[in-house]
Image 1 (cartoon, helix red, strand yellow):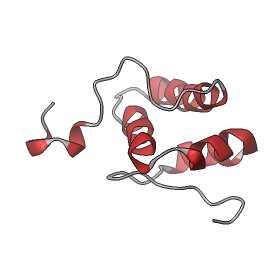
Image 2 (cartoon, rainbow, N blue to C red; image 1 turned 30 degrees about the horizontal axis):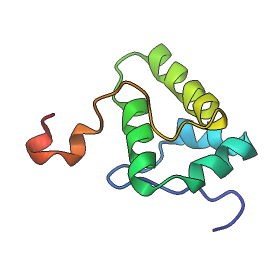
Image 3 (tube, one colour; image 1 turned 60 degrees about the horizontal axis):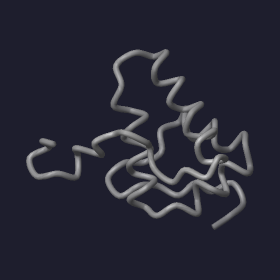
Image 4 (cartoon, rainbow, N blue to C red; image 1 turned 90 degrees about the vertical axis):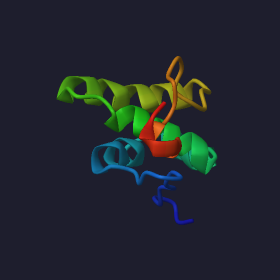
Length: 89
């Protein structure tokens, strides 16, 4: 994987706004690429599942911060419902 390549999730690809944030922080990008595909999928889904633009921006900021603080998955979130049967939690 090249220096600026960003690994994707199981179901989701990295959206452009999250991609931009990760590329701008090499340490966060390194932590991101070290995650399992399932863990990356959880972060992506957690980021894109919100309705408000402001909340999404906050989630993107938190992805980078949480990765740098050693978190490997979003905290206190039920998980990606896209992976569950019939899209239901």
